[in-house]
Image (spheres, rainbow, N blue to C red):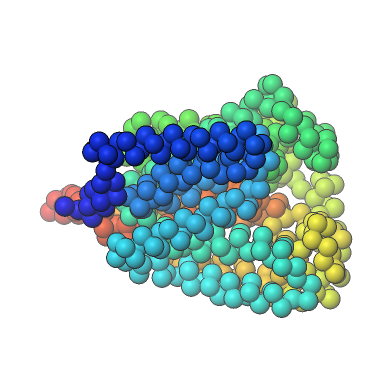
Length: 500
């Protein structure tokens, strides 16, 4: 009898007996009575808390029995919570963080019970971010630091990268698991694209109108080129860059997946993502596929693939830079302007702001503190940056200072080099290597876009650091996945027969 069967048998020993059935029925009746009492008393908070207890219990049992699937839940939680925030007030960061930490604690407890090997989690990615984490802790000594702002910012600076570094190598153990991650991601890409289409065709709901007109987002979302749609994301830039990430990932991955239906499905997802990218009106989004394709070309070990990718890259660049084809379309016209930034007034304003920021940053060697380099009015720090950072990397600079930004870039630069080395020299299965290399290339494109826009927001973080963690998991996946081992053996036999 397996541990799972033994645990399941001992977990609910009364489920087949009459006594067990009677106890279950009485428990349900008593629970419904308590809910009725809370509802009649008007205590909604306690009512909701009691109502979710059965769901929490089911999730807890599911986690114990299927703990290797827990990363799927963490992965999609970022999308689900973001989607819910479109219709109701949700503290996205707080809810997602609590969910992730609780799941991590459960996994540790279950890992002890099941004697799980954690050696794959002690990898280069975790080591690099441990160094970065120490600097983030040192930021607590910054005289301008506000503890509440630090608590919020540390999640995307350190917590999510560390969680991915730990969880991905021990939960994603097969190539099919990577395909499942892509499928889960694709579902939300389709929903996001449809939501963008709905906004364009049927208008905005009450919360979205409040975002535009009460909170002032209309100034950046209703502009000369038209309306910039944002789906259920925090803003159009976040939506556009995410759709660009998806367009590249699924557009390239469809050439490497084995199943025909999956190739067709990925092509549909890629087209939907391209549509979402264009209606967002986010010019920065163009950097993701272009820079991503360039990185993919550089790490390609196939000359045919190298020249084909290089041709596509030159064709896309030439289309937008040197032609006027499609100029009558407002979205193509908007994207084309990204290739001539010198004539863009908003681009010039950004350059002027960054020059002015150097004077303010001269007196802040450690920056303004985590979470305080941007719009920090709600935290009331002693000193505030009067100019908006307007991009993620500039935000890192104003948050952590020149040394902090340098360390952040070095950490991620080493991460790219390390991941590329693993894929090129430690992974022999072509299908596995190319699918993960596509994800890594998207990460490169994301950081190029992060220079121009603040796009380190939900759900981009989970996509970004899952991609890095998969690179460190890849050698173990290839070693443990029997399907990949058999695939490599078949390839070797074919190569030998051709040689003979």
